Image 1: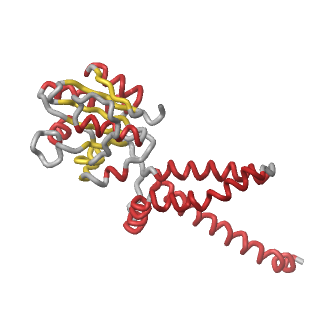
Image 2 (image 1 turned 60 degrees about the vertical axis):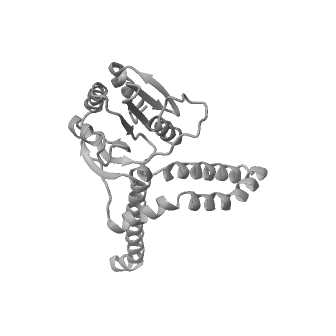
Amino acid sequence: MEQFFITIFSPFKAMVLKDVFQILILYVVFYYLLILLKETRTMQMLKGLALLLSVSILASIFQWHTINYFLKSIWPIWIIAFIILFQPELRQILVDIGNRRIKFKAVFKSEDAIYDEIAGTVKKMLRKRMGCLIVIERNTGLKEFIETGSRINSDICEALLMTIFTPKTPLHDGAVIINHGKIIAAGCILPLTQKKDIDIELGTRHRAALGITEETDAVAIVVSEDLRNVSFSVNGKITQVEPDNLKEMLKLYASKNN
């Protein structure tokens, strides 16, 4: 009898193990893909596609024929738009997979210590009449902009930031991008705002700060050597701030949890 049950159930046991193994492989693949996608704006597009898919499922369940017909009609457009708009990022993801450059989060300085370092550096730059553009990544990935500069991946420190923005050095004209308590890259090229109604005194750094905060949820800090002031940009708006208030502004807007 025991042999009989072994004979009957052994194929099912093999099938269960095989299915579990396949599920684990798919889990690992999708997990690493999500890690790679999280560093790019592609994730925002995927959220939109997920929302459309959810509405489509609800429309099928509740038989909302008009909505269902409309969503089915625009799916091909969304897929084509996704491929066209995010072709560079998709190509970079494939390169990263090929190079096996999967990144994991490490333990970094506390946010408070990071903001202290940034605020202190900004004050020193202002005293020395040095200009700078510092961008802090939040939830929207800035990988496509990081790739336009030089990778650094260093801890945030005053000496390094002062060196980067020293006039006539190779990287001083671009932006520094910070994420997870690290200076990820320097000399990065950012999109300029297309607004026409901004103050004519605002230069290229200010326009770049506006541009990046219009396209993403990052925050940007600009020190103007000409105007001798500090500006803070978030959500496509830029305002002048007192250097002593910069840390509070960072705590209010720069955290990924806000």
